[in-house]
Image 1 (spheres, helix red, strand yellow):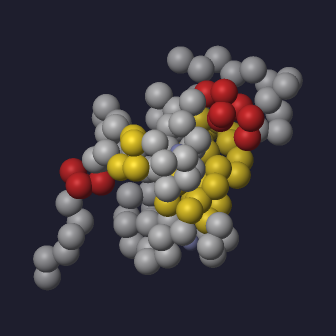
Image 2 (cartoon, rainbow, N blue to C red):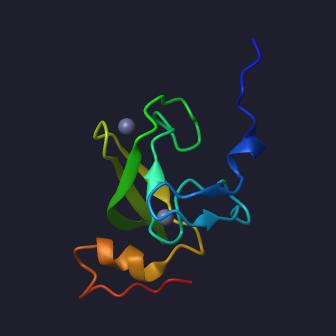
Length: 112
Ligand SMILES: [Zn+2]
Ligand SMILES: [Zn+2]
């Protein structure tokens, strides 16, 4: 059975549901959150990119942490409370990112 899972289709420009700015596609990976305000949409069920959720709620950036030198942002759905962690994109607004972290004052990361 054919489904609509086209890997390329996830990497397209979109308008952010939170700050209403238009977001260009990411260079390499499929972008799943806004680089300006870091909000996302609840479209994935279990794995980032699976697009298996019917929720469609706005997902707020709830926490960030570092894993293997990469920044991970945890999105929490405002509708259903689902939490999904996603890798940050290179052009995410790092000031905004830091403002999410409770440790931002004593833990200045080396972000390259
Ligand atoms: Zn936004
Ligand atoms: Zn949801």
